[in-house]
Image 1 (cartoon, helix red, strand yellow):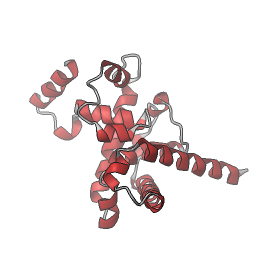
Image 2: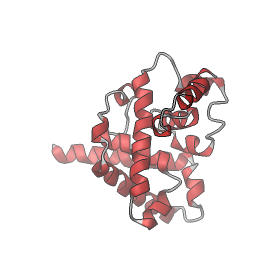
Image 3: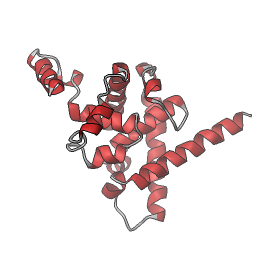
Image 4: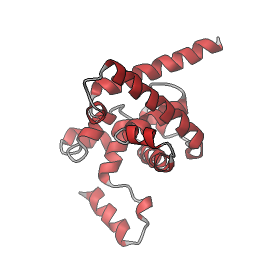
Length: 185
């Protein structure tokens, strides 16, 4: 309730909407990036915080506010790049995967598949740029295509809400970064 009042307070103060993150968007961003759970954030956006345990996990006062803010900023920047992306076929395919895209952006930033909540605090937002976005959306687009080849009985909306697909993405990211490390040796 306190967070909702703060959101209304800042709107009433004339702060631009682009600088205010709703509770729902904040929860979805944190759930996707810090907890590798974009499918739940996508499938249950309004009920995500109804359980006290979920609320406490997302808005844990012991966790860094900067990490929470950076999750929102990563999502917002990724969404902004997605809106300007000029390939309509890729945009259409990825429209239900913007939370997955935010998760991938954070992994691409750190070049690893397992990013801690504490590490998200250190993100330099200037480095979440169009080049990084292009890598992330190319990866996501390819992985959606590959997943559909083996799971052609499903559709994009169901895939976006499915833990199996998130696990698939995380495994592919893990393989990608292990391959990159091995090629440096």
